[in-house]
Image (cartoon, rainbow, N blue to C red):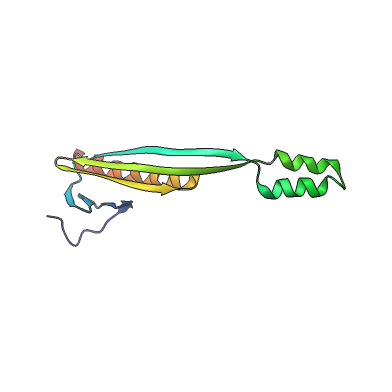
Length: 124
């Protein structure tokens, strides 16, 4: 069904995209007309890191400005992205765990690139 010599240009989880094909673990379909969606199921928590608390407690005996370390905040991101591709009879979803904002941006960028590939094939 797919051209064995056609390399994958981008992968998102278990889903691969070549110039003309979308390849999932249970099949492949032409890239033209493929819909690619990314659902963001992440959440972030902002908290004071442990090291800042320790420095503030130890430093308070020497200098009261060390209490300013309690204002330091750290944001932790956890969750997953759900990437779904649909084209005709091929429908596949891949769950990608993420732990940073950079990972979320990376996979969103990959999805945008895959959508551009699909649009280029559909318009030609």
